Image 1 (spheres, rainbow, N blue to C red):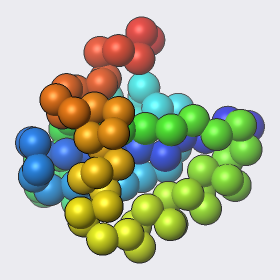
Image 2: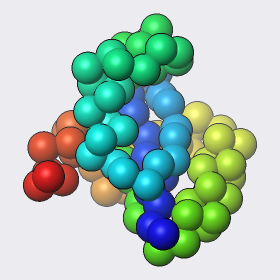
Image 3: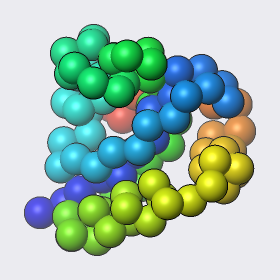
Image 4: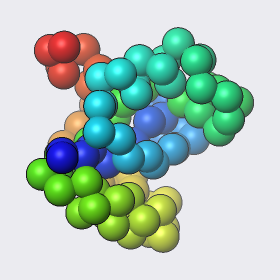
Amino acid sequence: MTGFVYIMASKRNGTLYTGVTSDLARRVYEHREGLIEGFTKRYDCKMLVWYEEYFNVADAIQREKSIKRYYRKWKLDLIESINPEWNDLYETLGW
């Protein structure tokens, strides 16, 4: 089973949320529409700014745990390494 690790943001350099899911398009849609109570809804994290796919969901979970331990600066650098303009990547998923 595949898994995705992803980062949602409220805006460029704004509040960040790191998560893991097996269905990235569905999960990001839920965040964007405010269908999930909790952190992303409270802090308006609606932009998908970074993600990685893993062929093993256990690997995705491990990567998520690692990212959550990283300093904010490292997370910002990670995002900007693939998305320097902080575009919302949801539309690029093609689903």
